Amino acid sequence: MSDSKPQPRNARLRTGASVVVAAALGATAGALAASRIPPDKFAWTGVVLLPLFVLIEALLGRFVPVFGDRNAARLALAGALVAGFYVAWLVVRRL
Picture 1 (tube, one colour):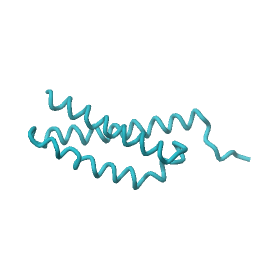
Picture 2: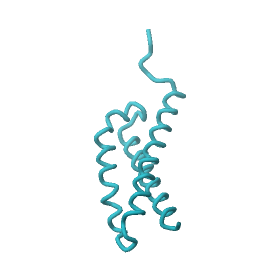
Picture 3: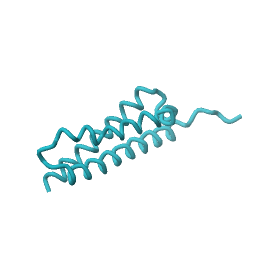
């Protein structure tokens, strides 16, 4: 008689944790890219993010139950990746 639906608090924790992990992956990639890519080659940052977007798409099926909606999962995780990436990029470039 167990209910297959996750509890609302549990779902929020999972959603928050997955967004934080996506932002951390983006920040790690951003810091590495900022330290490796020459300053005049800013256009290459999109190429650095491409494998992370492919990873999100490959694992999206696992995130859908957490978010409840495929598009919401894609938008939240991609937004967290991009935000983490560019925050780390700007922090490393200003140092």
